[in-house]
Amino acid sequence: MDFSNYSARDFVLNESFQKWILEPDEKTRAFWEEWTIANPDKSETIEEARTIIQSIKSTLEKNIKCDRDEIWGRLMKDIEVKKPTSKSL
Image (tube, rainbow, N blue to C red; front, side, top):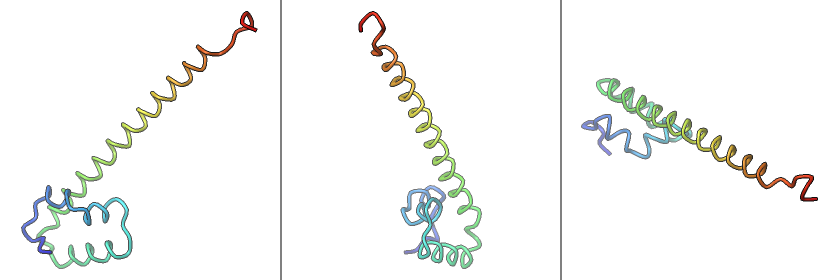
């Protein structure tokens, strides 16, 4: 595949590139490291795409943590509300 005309957005949307940034395996690491060495003129574009992906990942992780904390809080509140009191025993 020819990545020479890729923009940062194109790299961000490319599954292989995403894998290299987020969960690299030996194959994707080798490919992208070789490609970046062979294409130094794209280093700024690659770095921009990497930053975008890492920012998206960070935002998603924060949202998941907030959602998890909110759900946990609701569950604890429901448990407290449904907890039997000494009057109901």
